[in-house]
Length: 250
Ligand SMILES: [Fe+2]
Image 1 (cartoon, rainbow, N blue to C red):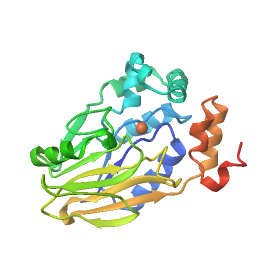
Image 2: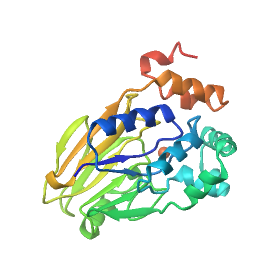
Image 3: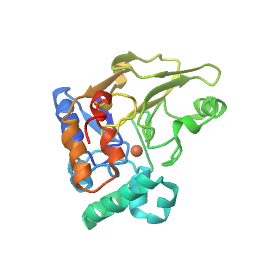
Image 4: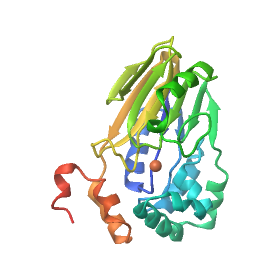
């Protein structure tokens, strides 16, 4: 069995389309989405409808939560708040109903799926959690693996309560150890912040205990152009581009 775990699409339909094509080519059995379908990108409505049409298990992200309760926009920085205000004008009632039905966590295949940090936080970043709390979580977590998003950076944290290992998740396959538990940050499809522009996601093969990190190229400047044309903050357009393009792009 092969499961694709995608997260943080952030209204970037070009990135999502490329990732779904890659998933098609990888003979995937299931897709799970870790939330933040909207915010930053210019096509939130199309992204939500595409995810809804897939019918894949999907959890709530913090930007999705902000669409349901604009009061939490006070917690966002100025650019993210501006982007969400414009995003709200682009979302249909149908998409808001879909978002309102998303759970904060899903447990399946001896794994947990949550946007921020287990057991069910939509808001906590993995980098905010102390090493001691991570150790404690490894001793009590009922599932073997927990998949998170939210930071937009790929990361693999493993341990057993006494030992702890923490590393980036490089492109390609990673074999898991049967005596450890794992928190896997799958990065971001539509707004990566790991220094490379490709849309990131992770394939998980539970039966052979293997992860494969995928980085998928897509038309970066087309997606960035759409953000500018929608009047959304240019910082979120620039972040989509390879570093060498950014200086002369605007
Ligand atoms: Fe996000």
